[in-house]
Image (cartoon, rainbow over all chains, first blue to last red; front, side, top):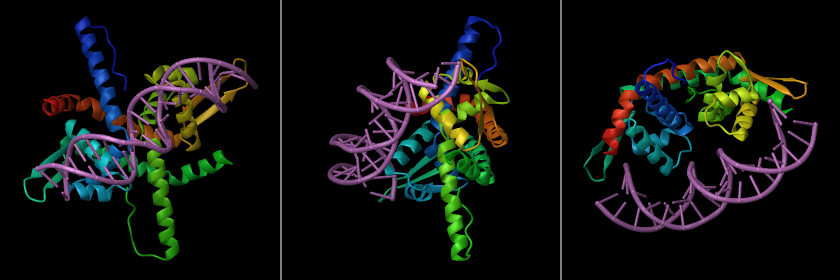
Length: 127
Length: 127
DNA sequence: CCGAATCCATGCGGATACTG
DNA sequence: CAGTATCCGCATGGATTCGG
C-alpha cells in the first residue's frame, strides 16, 4: 500500500501524500465483505436490484443500496434507470469494476483451495 | 462464491452446503480492511507486534490483537513467542497467508492504477 | 513489550413504513 | 420495483488499566 518515497519538491511530496490517503480511502471502501460479494455477484452479467439481492446471500435492502451507491460513486458499477412503471434499474460492472473482479475471483479461489488447511488450523487453535 | 451444484446423494449435498457456509465464513473473516492491511504489511518479513502496529496506519492496539488472533486461528499467520523479559512476539505469514497476500497485492495495484478514474468518477457523482 | 479485560460512545446495520 | 427515511438495538472499536 505504501507509495514509493523519493525526495522531490514539496509539491511533489504533497501530491504523493494526497494520492496515498486517497488510495487508503478507496481501499477501505472496497475491502469489505458486502462490496466484494456484490462485485462477484455481478460478474459479467447485468442484474436488476432484486436480482443482485437474490445473488448476495443475507444482504439487507439497506446495505445493498448503500454499497451499490458507493460502488457507483467510485465508478465500479454503472447504474441505468428505465423510466417505466414499475421502475426497472439495472446494474453492471464498468471496466475498472471488472478489473477488480478478477482479483476477487482469485480471492474466492484462494478460499476454496485452502478450505481444508484452514478448517484444520481452526481445530488445532480452538482445542 | 457459489459452489457448483450437481445432483448427488443427500450426504454429498450436505457436504457441499457445509463447505459453502465455511467458505463464506472465511471470506467474511478475511475480506475486511484491517486483516488485508495486516497481511500486506507483513509481506515477506517477520515483524514484532509493535512493528506491525507501526506499519498499519491508524490501527488500534485492540483491533491489531483481534485480527492477529483471527489470522492465527485460520492459519494465515504464525505467532512465535520468545520467553524473554520484556516479551518478544513475532508474526510471519504462513504459506496460505503468503498465497493470499499475492491477491492483496493485485488489489493494491488495482487501487493505484485506477486512482485517477475513481477520483474523476467521484467528482462527477458528487457534483 | 505483549495481551486481556473493562468501560463506553458511536455508528453500523436490520426492520419497517412511505413515496414514485 | 426501486429508493429514501426513521427508529433503534447491538456489536464494533477506541481508550484505558492492569497483569505477566
